[in-house]
Length: 586
Image (cartoon, rainbow, N blue to C red):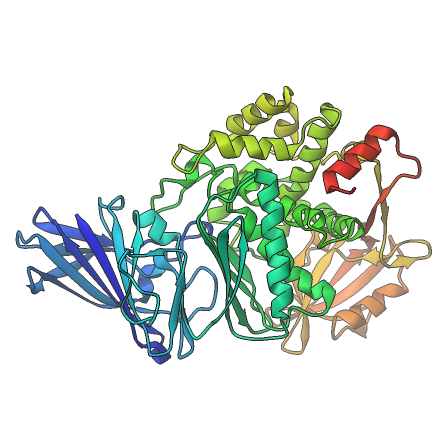
């Protein structure tokens, strides 16, 4: 069977794309075309079919009956013909790295949201033709067909070895800028849509450094060429999605200055590029081959995403783009966030991974009470696991060695890593150590993480405190998260088992007064609490569904929200060696 897609941007200002699928070598009386309902790397059912319109079909060059048989499948009556064509339009006006965005300046095309596959033929080779407005160019991780020509953009033909590769290869079509550099003789491109306060030379220099540092960890670059799609948009923009030899990066256009803001670009590039190995090659068994019609489960997202997040900042330190001091500051901030998340006591990392489809992308006011992020906690556990391995082997082995082993043991065309046993066996093979207890307690369980012992092995100590003290101790607290909405102060969520929780305060309550004095915003609430004491009773006046109520709350102490991770005064020789080799400090 031969499959050819044609993508035409004839009405981009109306956010529309025209797609034609030509299939030859068809057998049977019917042929089903299916549009995925999710895209790899983003574990949420997204119902892409809702954006498909005007579907028609032909068989043997003549109009053919076509009907929808479920939410994402169209069935064509072939009439015994061996050539079938399906035509449809796709609406795309959602600017994320997981959805199509088409306008009069560009099209960022997500293949899973655009190209229907032929049921039963996802392993067939594919060609893709692109027709774009005059002056627009095409960038993609796909290779041009042997007789293809890069310019002009109209009529370009690309090839994919199968549907999985096509899904893994977004396209950026428009009047973009292209920055280039080479590592190990392999071309790399930064394709930029939009403009802001970026320094192009700095982008090239720092991105190349990240690529080189990651290459040094694994020993090679497992692709022929690589493309960074950098989409610059409004203030709230953000996100990244990894692909086999490309990545989509979405950031605010003025994020590149000052230095602390620029960290957002560096960390996003570092994270998504590390996925070249971790996820795209080193993958959980559940993450391929893909069933694009339903959820694909794994308990290893903590390793796929969390360990990647751990290496995100670690690589930047090793690359000289973050100082060790700044790295420890960022790590400390993450620990504070986790330790002030009550859900860490209820949900394990393995459970968070498995439940990603229904929880991670759908947070609500109770999420912090019942769940943890496998990104956040996974990154912290990655650091502790690395330090644990180094401590047990007297710094002879590390998580770096485990990652290199996994890269060789589980190639792209292999079956993927079995669940917990696969990771444990890799660690045992590399280090000779059995970390079953570590996994049972901190990955499969909800025990508090062993910060003191793990960081202490590298000569580090943790110093906890409060950002805002009252009388030398922590300030009094209600145990609520608030938001200002429509000129009123509302409860965004309550901390499980905290003072407000015990008193019966709930999300969406509109706070009016504390002890009879108005609270109009977060600042005034903080002021009202500033002269109270821990253990004191206060009366809150509030509206709940337009009904005026009062609640008495006994103030608790705010959790410690300030942490420093610092070198001990007199580390021993092994501690100094561990710290230096961990962060690659010469």
